[in-house]
Image 1 (tube, rainbow, N blue to C red):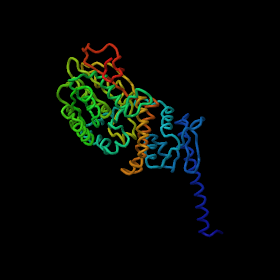
Image 2 (cartoon, one colour):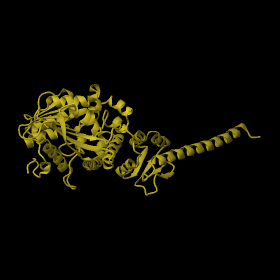
Image 3 (cartoon, rainbow, N blue to C red):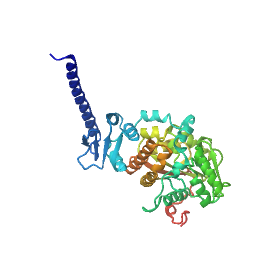
Image 4 (cartoon, rainbow, N blue to C red):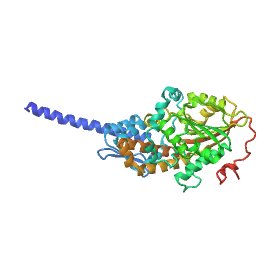
Length: 421
């Protein structure tokens, strides 16, 4: 008759076998679930024990390696948040091209229906005055030294415009500013209001190159300090005023209203307030303007991982939301709409390459977790624009009764940069 110790040992070995079998079955179920959900994606999944699963019959562009079971389960339960959090923590690695992998996932992901009530519930929380400064501070006040590592020399943190495929990032960002100015048909003496001015590059460019005066609004203290210092150094402080305030506080009159990269932080529930501001300040006869923003083809929730860790309070609207919320209540006509998403994909490729070159510097400023988080953010943004999941809209508008607009777009593509043929 076996001793109690022996009986206990036998029971333990049997329990270990059942546990191993249970875990193996759970892992297999997780892999099967992911293969069903992402069927056709040319990606291989690899577990910590070497088990692999291909999501497609075609050769994989990359391999996602899971270092633990919790990372695998997290991806099954919440694909976007689960992948982002596990990758940031180093519990998931990607062997191969990260951008190519993310783009492949975007293209294979089943069509996501409009969020309807879920989206409305989300938008009701966006752009609230009590949190606006905190949201902006979270992203834009990480330090000018950080952004200087991988942005262009003018510190432009919005989509560039590549007039030629081989243009440098610096050339493309200056081309974008010129392009915006041509769309606004700036002329010497124009009074311009800019809502959300970043580090001040566009405001200073408009004043220097087109002879206008600018009042530029922002609530990022780091950006404002940089912009004001640059205006003083370049002798433009008498023509460009950088104002620490929210777009809702804009006062005074202007001939031109421009906003590049701010609408994403406003939120649909505040579009009417933005439209009211534009109508209040814009010249009644020949006022004109431009909104440049990241958007979607249809209303949908913002990427939850980016919203949580990178851009709190952000929302990328559909054109229909902007048209009905910002423009329709007022005597404003949309004059032109252009989608520059492929330009943004190219811009992000430049940013990501520069970021990777300075990854060691970023790690010294923050830590490895931060490096992985921002690498994933930049890569997923590039993949989103390249795959058509995300859009970059430039919407030009004017007063409804203004008949002085050019009949063609020929001046937008002038080579001298000032809209003259």
